[in-house]
Image 1: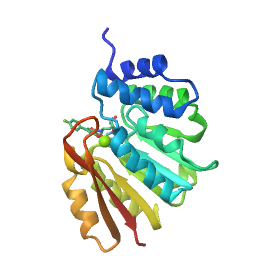
Image 2: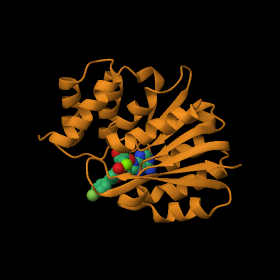
Image 3: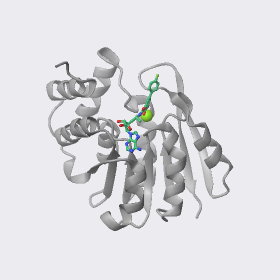
Image 4: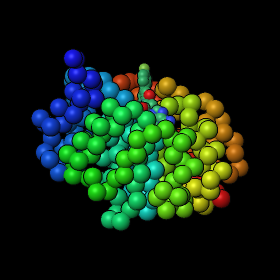
Length: 214
Ligand SMILES: C[C@H](C[C@H]1O[C@@H](n2cnc3c(N)ncnc32)[C@H](O)[C@@H]1O)NC(=O)c1cc(-c2ccc(F)cc2)cc(O)c1O
Ligand SMILES: [Mg+2]
């Protein structure tokens, strides 16, 4: 049967990247997406903004919603200090399978816990399952209509502390209007928009960084 796009992306990594070298895995995926097939990774342009925010926060606990093939997982994990707890959640088993292989190819499997499932089911159990009290950094990149319900779950389950940083992908394209309205109008957050473009295109998109004020 025909392979899937994530499987073809994995093949491109195995062919063009150097095992244990995260930078080469990132470059191989970007090359594949620019020259073979577009795919919904955060990409190189928004990826650089993601890198700068992760570096600035230097988090001890990280949560990513929407692993897809693990591109942003690798971008984030390669920047983390030893001992950082990093959980990434992916709903689709086939994508999760490819992500595991790409994360392992980059040599970052020991830095990441990939959980297969839906964010809405996992978030209420995170404290119990992983002994994490609050997240220093959260990257939202899953179904765009889940950003708002999930940030409310973070509040409800006390997973945000003063200074927690949330970074949301695709706030323009495909767009997350309700989420933007919430974080930009809530007195509990200080939000800033980072203009950029939809991965591998000239279409306008950007990232929204929101600081939880406690
Ligand atoms: C949603 C996907 C990313 C992944 O998220 C997992 N997922 C979902 N809901 C949950 C959950 N509730 N819990 C855990 N995982 C979950 C899923 O299975 C995908 O693998 N991302 C996108 O759809 C996405 C789409 C575009 C895009 C932009 C312009 C176009 F013309 C077409 C597509 C760009 C992007 O940058 C994206 O990020
Ligand atoms: Mg995205």
